[in-house]
Amino acid sequence: MLSHPVKIQSIVLLTALLGGCTVDSVQTSPQRNYVLEWSDEFNGEEGTLPDETKWTYDIGTGQNGWGNGELQRYTNNPENVSLDGKGNLVISAIKNTDGSYTSARIKTEGKFTKKFGRIEARIKTPSGQGVWPAFWMLGEDIDEIGWPQCGEIDIMEQKGQQPFITYGSLHGPGYSGGNAITNSFRLEEGRFDTEFYTYAVEWGTDYVDFFLNDNLYKRVLSSDFDVTGEWVYNKPFFLLINVAVGGTFAGFPNENTSFPVSMYIDYIRVYTEQ
Image (tube, rainbow, N blue to C red; front, side):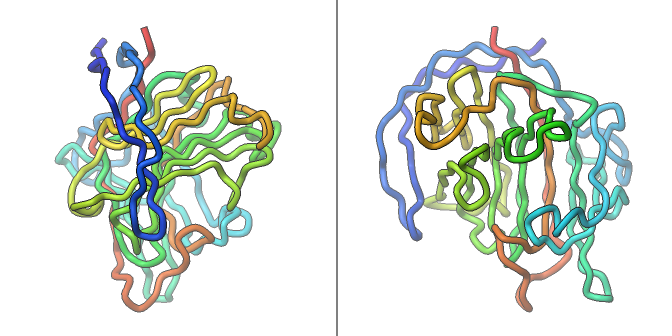
């Protein structure tokens, strides 16, 4: 198995506040040794669907637009989700001639789950008003106990109208939806839709750390939950990645949103701590 580089460094935690950055504190990233457990490098012929041994799909519009008032219908059509023949998975949101939208949401539910470790992906995200790309995780017991009791880890989500800000969040009982525990990272230069960035969490029994290009920008500890809610992250989770259109987080498209929009995923890798 492949080893992940050990990181021992001082890292500044940044918070984007109304278009600016403030320095909260300086943290030292702990020494953690990781080995690769699971990955998808998205190698394959152009136009083919992702590996069916690793991925399945959410299909349709879901209840109340997947609970968020989203506009798209998710499909497993190659025009919405397929390999590009260059080592990337491409998820595209399309506006149809009748004004409806299609996109894709793939997941490892029933095929792969992970409890603790490092989960990362190298992604170039789409932009545009009302476009909502995300790379995230849900507790595998969601069908038994529901959301948000199952827990949700948002490794990356973005508002397409702000292609220089990325968010990392936790949702659980007592802190879900608009009350999630969240933080953002704002690029001082560059945009997330013009080049690839690496988004990751490192996750253990009492912490979830959020990274952008190995910069730690948010640390959540189980001790933070004495008052705010219940820590529900000591169990397996499955992975999801998608591009939504509209909804409560990113708002809705307007006449300036140019479809189709596409997210390019170079790889997704999951590591276990030695």
